[in-house]
Length: 427
Image (cartoon, rainbow, N blue to C red; front, side, top):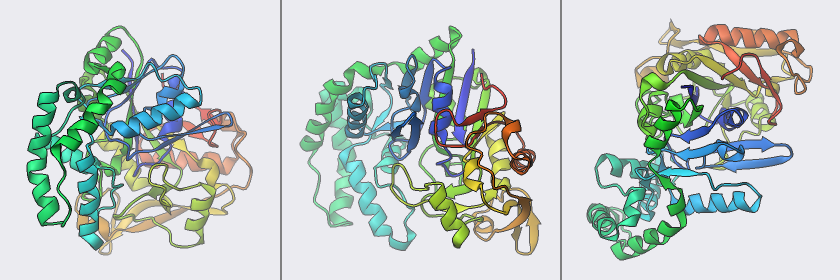
């Protein structure tokens, strides 16, 4: 019953797509369990680059069944566009399964998201404007639209009416926007029903039966640990739980079925959007990391904020996720620095703090305490084993492993599918 969770151990964009794709050939199911098309994964296969937003990375692995779980929010137009793009490139998407309990991102959710961010001005959260937060809010407020509702026009109409009763009041009286017609929304949503019907399934049943049959199931988080709604840098977070516990609720499997939890760490740190970031760089080093690492959001198109590796965050991710392994990505990006700073603690009000402060105020004022590690100049992109790495690169990995609290079992030394050093097998 090998069930693995793969998730980001920082603020997202750590390279989960590469890691998932690497494991995809060895697993039977790859499951997205939270988030929506606010996530982005870049997967390089040979000379082909694929940008995935909503679909699980396993869709690129023949023989693997990709699953969109009940914890995901689905924009049907984005889903169909992404499927069409892959089909045009010869990728077989016919095995995709979508939970009938996943919630639909409606046109009014997108509208509310965009106008709210504009209204907040300087206090904006930095959302992607894709309706993710409002859809999760509808889910919690019990006025959400689920995939299964597309197949009952009466229920769908009632639910859209209930949702728009309040939203139209807000749109017209607070934001001075035109009211949204119920009939228009219902017509658009019904138009998607037949197009996605072949994919809709009871994914909770499918996944539990697969585990009982000793199939290998990989659960893939969409964002990083520090963007978790409960355990991240609130309020600058996403609206769901990308941490390991979210895999259980977002896919409908019990925690006793999870056998391994793998955290993806970038060899430095990045984040997109607003919020505190202790190791953020505003100098030439930051620009170099952004340029060499091609640090631009796959989904947002925004430049990522870049900084040095933060071991405090890594330790926190190990704790809240119960991490058993790390996959370290983009080690090659650090080639060329004579010395590489690593944040080992924070200074807050003159005191050294070695664990992530629970207070948002303290974290906002945290200053990094750095330890300098020797760098390397050798090209490491062709390394196939840990021993192939220069000694200083080996020492860097060992230091990060010791500081982070879990073994580093794989290392990315380039963007390609085959540019990975596997130290310990994940399966």
